[in-house]
Image (cartoon, rainbow, N blue to C red; front, side):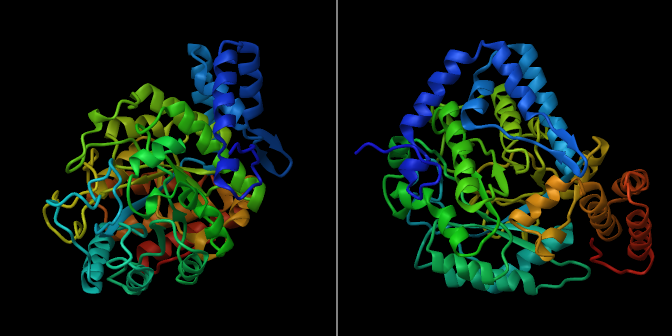
Length: 483
């Protein structure tokens, strides 16, 4: 059966249409050396100042694919420059900090790239009890984290939705010293509208689900058994999540499984689909690359991408979907993460452990890791590194708790009020971190940055209130101020 491309359709084969992707790749290849067209696309992507702030047109999947295919060094350099310009226009120099929390590695799927696949008989299987969840949360709070992304394998017996909901309730209930987890994002398998409603009622932040690959034939081969084998059910999950009331959803592909240009086009088409149907695109896009794990050798897959291509993909995503957060994890090395921070990335994990129950252990355990962690620095080291490179580490969750999610967050982003809202929120949460958790070296760098960045708040009243709140944080042990 032939499917027709339709971004407003709710059928996966129509909004991620194979024929349209192939036609897009052919178009991009045919026009990659048309430098006049490339310049037109780049100019379209550039932020435009308005009376009320700044706007970006974004790019279609075809336009973005032309840029990705372009091999002209000067044009590629321009892509990076505009990507950073967009990121600074809408997110400022803030970088949001989070950590993954692995609840269970029980899984019934047969994904050939993941060590949690059910035929792996030597990896220890573990599921956290609620007491163990509390211990993990306390360990994360003692590091200084405020935002988590919970992860669990797909197993209706060991990891039913009730277990996930109990864990969320436990996480939000733990108040340790000055520590609180203020936002729980959820990365679990595709589920029903009813279950998404339950997650929404539990107070989750973003629902995250990686597509892994948009190439349907490859998808079916990579997921030979288990419920994840159903390509359409998996690909249509975000529509069910939004029907269930979840405003913020996060997309991602696992680069290295399929040809990257195909994946890129599919990813942008998925974002276009969400915008066309629901009026708001993805809250985040993650860009993980396939990494070594327990019984997984990435060299067995022949679609790996080098660092230059990876950076170019990230920049092109930023140009195509300017208002969406881009996430880079500790899968990548410090050097790669540093490079991508200047290509449009707005969120990073820090001090991450990808094993079940890993944070409560003094030594990093490796026996239940989902993938090797390349950047093994502590959160304190990551925070100081970000500041030394001119980025404000932000632990802010204000928008989520003030109801500024979905299209309301996008309106804030587009209004140009970042410096009057998100910027002071970032500084106040950074101050909390410095007072409660930071090493002396990090404190010195951090307080110097706060004094400098405070002066960049344009509104006099906001700047004055922020300064007063910072003093309360430092001197009166008061917490959780937000605009």
